Length: 448
Image (cartoon, rainbow, N blue to C red; front, side):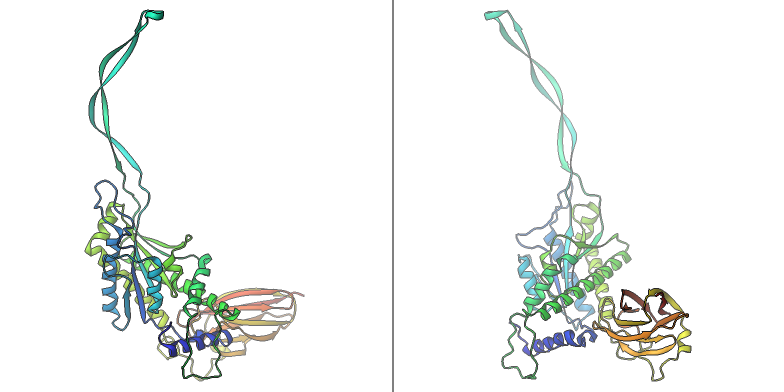
């Protein structure tokens, strides 16, 4: 049961608006709670150092040590954020319990710490020799008088020992849930609100929350699952970049094709960091050293800071770079001072063309002005998940150009838009990107 019913009601109201007016999409997401999960624990050891002369370290101990340093660093850098570790001692939690801890605490980010490994090959080497008695078999006589004679003799044979060959692969990788696993993420989002109790809540009685079994709610859950994937990918990329800054080998961001329960059952953006290979000598020593553990914790924290700054950027408040436009709307002459960075050419078959414009990728409060043949057709419009539409009439015998002018950069630069063009015969989709230095445009060629 969700404890804060007023907040829950507000959230449902926001969801309702997202479906019908897309207003919720324009509010930057605040990072209030971060969940840090130390992989494995207790009876679940995880991987362990097994190669010859390894430290015999256990993954559960490595992940706990790094996680505790990460929790401390996050709390130091972000005292206003509630940082919740799934465990602080060597105890066992099932993956279901870990996901529940994250969801019950209303996490905004889920950071899962692990150590990588891989199958080890077996080698052998000669360590000495030993004397071995063997027997030479001969026979005497024939028929019933035939006898077997065993003659012993000694031979020197090698003595071998077998050992595990260490891995040579090293480095840190970051993992996110693959898109085809989004159904599990959607289920987690839907389940989160199945038991909301609206009784005794002082709210607008005209508001009717969406039922979690309704098609509208399922559509909304899919939207959130897609958004969580995009944000997970963004944070994972930032972590990978910060790891590279340490001089350590950053292996990249990977999508896990086999489900990781804690990634797919958590109702928030989630990443899993494979800090190093426990069966590679260099990596095993690194992830067991206080210096290496602290370096990883600081790299992840730096990535979280960059991510947090992007997500929480308040584009509605004027600033030096992302200020909203002044009252004097730029004229076409002013727009021409910005060169066109990219131009898309579209062949259409009718003079009258319908154009729908909506935000592309992340909804981050992009604001655009649109000119067609140097005439203003859209003035300072906020892009949302719901398209706004207008009609343009092409002039035969001339180049017809639609220019997209960025009024701001949104929470995530640059300003991006998806334009859907329909001439009554063919439907086109064009992605445009603009900023404070460059415009984007679409040129229409009329071919009846």
